Length: 145
Image (cartoon, rainbow, N blue to C red; front, side, top):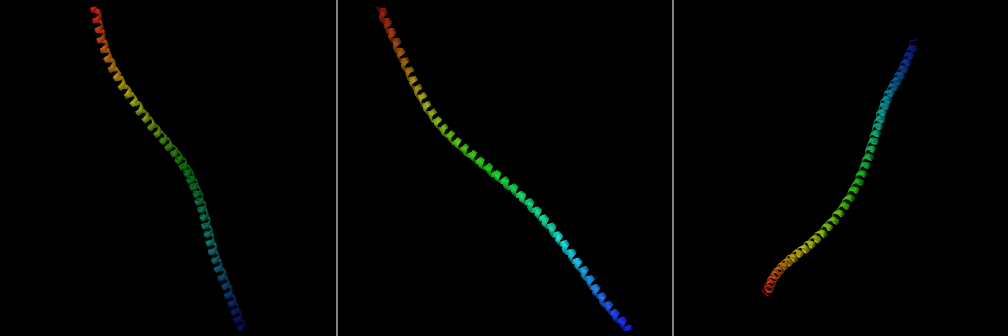
């Protein structure tokens, strides 16, 4: 029995080694799978976070694009208003220049009229003096007769 016992012990040892190998393999595989699943979970969480970040950045980009478009439209409107104002200024400047020329013409007319009025007043004074002299002569002639 000794020999049978040794064979049996040898078989048991061999079985135990195989069982130990299987257990170690199962435990190792389980740990590896757990680590792999954990990494995959982390990657999934990272992917979700990246997806959320991309979604937020896309929304921000769209908002900024809308703001930019609004500003471009407003700048276009302001530029149009500025151009219209420049045309108005140009028109008013021409009108002021025209009116200034008219004022100069009217000023010259008034100055000429004043000069003529002064001449006419001077002539009237001369005629008044001559008329007074004539009346005095007439009175003296008619009074002597």
